Image (cartoon, rainbow, N blue to C red):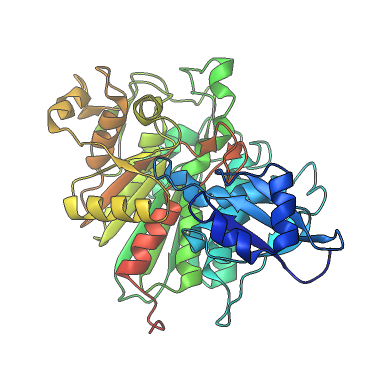
Length: 456
């Protein structure tokens, strides 16, 4: 294959006749002889008059019933030969098509290597790094974190990822580790992680001018979740290396914000633990007084994520930020309600909810608002403490969000995202494995609210 990018022609039933006239008679007759039909996802390689590879056709969907089809050009990543390619005509959404292509090239290659070289997309741009390339690189780095096994992505290793971000961007970073958590009044984070070989920790990163609007990202960093003394069955632990998906999402979004130079005072808070079992492990029915001063009865040691987020959210609220987003692989109930592809989010701010939904639709990073249903708040009642961390009564994703709301009151606006962080099946834009959800939608929102001061 030459170094000159070969053309990819996007075609549908309504555009086939026009595109047929543009690709040349040899290519058009070859496509028809090969039985090509302009159906969604269909790829057809095209020859020139000498039989050399001259380009490709790609069938584009004209339907809007599956929003992920906007990223459907990712199918080209596995259908095209290695080498440079370019879009010869405009797909329905050029930016999302290019992003889908790049995201689909992802492989977790730490142990098996990259394999044979694949195709790559060439996009003309004259004004610095292409934003789509930055977004894809950040998402794929986040996917790497979620896919990394827990024997390698320990609490210290996840902390090191935040340190690398700080080193690369000039951000300020502080870590509070082990018994220092007790000395600094983070008792819930300490209680969840104290049973593990590596001590728990809270990572606190700041970036941006000090008088800019304050945006805080909080990510659940449970590097592995056994369930604690309420131990999970073996099948329930199969994907528990991804229980730090909230931290991976927060790191990804922080990276995007910093690289784009958005005009915010960014704070990244990562409570990082392993929920393990030893003589020091917290027990069901233990009562722990949180950083906020609320006493919490441990209803189930497998409901640990909300505990570490509670201390982190209380800490975040102490500086009254303008906006707080927290991310967590928090409840199986969220998957029952909406499945793995559509994370629910919760907020009391109706205007913010509308923004989140709009930006999620615009960039095909779907999110769906669920209610902070006030009447369920009483389900958190405990007979021995201010609240129970894991009450019964159903609506598990809602009650988990209501629990977190008790600790998030210091923020002017707050939203909680109950993500899954995993592709159970391969999609056009990504393989089975770790996935970053919500980061692209919220980066779009933050970019609109707080554009770079250097932007026109």
